[in-house]
Length: 92
Image 1 (cartoon, rainbow, N blue to C red):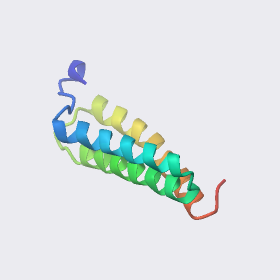
Image 2: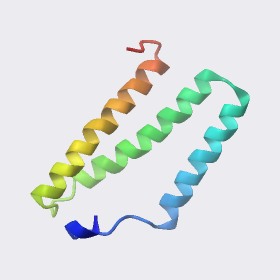
Image 3: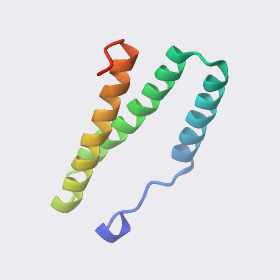
Image 4: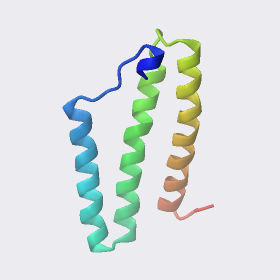
């Protein structure tokens, strides 16, 4: 990110959110409730999907940076869709 002229997001709120997601997933796995596990994973996928959408709204992105974010976002969306399909019982 720095090589492309940006700064990685490393504020405490992002780190705290990642930690909370990990703790919630760990607690969920202990209970072995598949539905709850899938919902927790989906919540994490929703969070990261939102971060990519926000990044793509930045009008100051270079074409190279925008292209990289779009490529990564394609993968994020696909992962989100797979988790959503599991949640709704239509796994592919």
